[in-house]
Figure 1 (tube, rainbow, N blue to C red):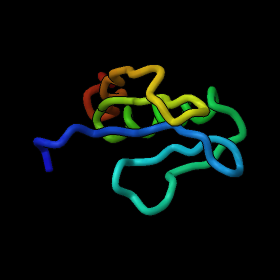
Figure 2: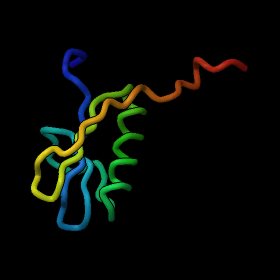
Figure 3: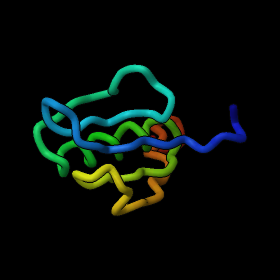
Figure 4: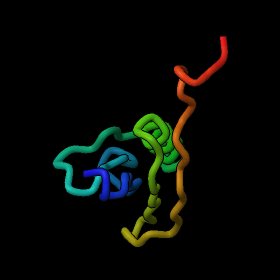
Length: 79
């Protein structure tokens, strides 16, 4: 699976905005606004080693795509 990119989508959901992994049956999170969902998706991707974030508009089309870097690794910090 290392050759497959880590991707999360933010898209409209009945109860707000969903963060989903392509191919997953359930959303990772459903949040009230697109901005909050995008922020949560960035956290998920950073914790998972980085990846691509695709934000979809109300029509389902990708309107923004960003690369999220790997998050801070506490094992690499000095101290």
